[in-house]
Length: 74
Length: 504
Image (cartoon, rainbow over all chains, first blue to last red; front, side, top):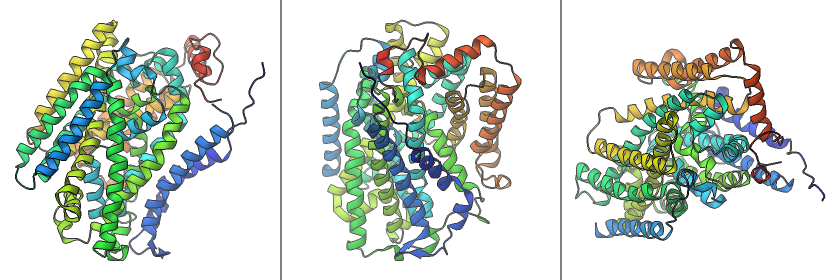
């Protein structure tokens, strides 16, 4: 009987998860978001940060699962 | 009123029909407490969402964003970080659960630290901290029925109706245990988070195209975060995100979700399904709050904006639908909390001192759930001064479980003495700071009482881990249970079928 070969988890997964935590928790990033922060592409920076970060974190979770499936982890 | 209450009644009938048709007799306490570890990813995802996002979120998240701005999106960020944590701990927690028949969070701590007292203390902290939130859940139904009555019912009568609905609903929670909770979570979750998100997006569209409100209409102050020089302190945003993310798995009703899945793959897939749904839902809540903030109708009562906007946009029909999604979300949260509390009283508090058979475990769990329901319902009917502050205090306390829980899962060092002392001292520090400074600790640069408590708790845990020598036999036992989840099952009660559920 042959054993199924499983590729190790992509290095991007722990890097992305760490980046999620840094982007969410690093106080200097929070301090940079003020009512006077610039607007980018008609969007205020505060909304880009607080609205964009959950999307980035969710994408990292979906990517991690996709990587697990594609490497044959299950 | 007939339209709004009629829609709610229709929803309740469908939930009851689903529960009646889904009834299966339990064969063991594991069946009752964690649904026999038999649920697939869709059920898991909806069940997590339904426990995680209570009905009050529709009121508080929109109201917070309307009154304070983008900081109101913080719940979306910490909720997603909680799912990242789930991705990291799922393998070990699920495998230990399956191999050692663990049913609750304290069960895992007993396996890891071999201390029954640690389990009892954790269980008591978890249950005591959950009660104020349960009472808030019941009372939020008062707001719901008051709004749905279009001003015809007073708040007290509305609370009594809400309490009556939830008490009746708990008959099936008590009767069916976790299986009933999860099966109904699927329907309630679809209504609350898929239906609720569609409603949210529709209301956002109405504000933009119907009322001509854009981001430019919103006050610039709404787009800043509390930072350097703010009243809350420079570390405030860090503290609420950090404690929010860590605290997620400290709640008994959330942690128990890891044991209801049929495999590690299911837990991870549920995360991958639930995360995008959570993002869309939470962002839609925040955007609705922001865009509604310029409306004069909202400024006076931002916490009621969910109902106000729905009524303005679509009259009684949309108001009724808005009420149904709040009720669906509240049901899932209340059911999950009550079920987890009953399981812990039976499994960890009474069962911690006296081995219980299947029948005794079931009877104690069911009686505990009935008692918790009646006590919470009774308290809800009264005006409890400082209830919300009490709930915040409970949160600062319950997150102290995070230290032994996460370090116990990820670090082989650490012992019961450090875990118990750290958790108890951290809890006392958090409660004293919260009571002494009422959440406004300017000297701590914005750190919350719970964050300070966790720092003390962590110091004690790590100091005890290095200062108290670990006996060779205990080290070997801990190494062995960790090895089991790394694919080396030698000498452990881990069968091939258990490891088949693992991630390689």
